[in-house]
Image (cartoon, rainbow, N blue to C red):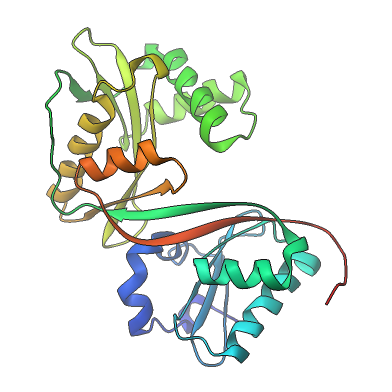
Length: 272
């Protein structure tokens, strides 16, 4: 693997067909200071925003044994010698890594990648999409803490949640769904990662308000907003969390691929 500047990267036809599965690579390529590496045949591309960010790796589905081994050694080296803590890869890379170097893997989450070109609703629920108001800061903070406890598991503090909520409320890409009583029951955010897709994330509904169709209504409204901008709605969903996947599919999302988020170990072992 050779370190290159982003200007030296060549986007081949195979990546171009899969770039909607990897929109964060496009997002990072817009940054000024990023790390990029490729192999000599341009069948592997690694991009990292900075040393604290996860590394995203795209690879051709036709890697030969030598290229596959090179990628495995590269990831191992970045973990042991460069303190890489997380990588996002295709499933086949994860399987190879698990077979060759299982001791550098701490935890994994397999994510389904979805796009939605034709949003649909099975049942229309009363309510409206809206922005959160400044005096709803504590309410949004509660949502963020709930999201962290169920999804991110970072141990988000109340103080940090309030600060994050304040930033989101002033962000025009952050939306809420209000029920008939004008209470916020679901939140969601848009991420403008690439020139072709807009990624929906941070979708979270109050536990006591679930199974009422609020999440579907917000997703449907957000998808239509994105399509009006002539972009494609996109999102990731934990493959193991079947209710969320089913909910997204019901709104019209179609699976286009899988990625695996791998939490890596700082173990300095020199096993072969």
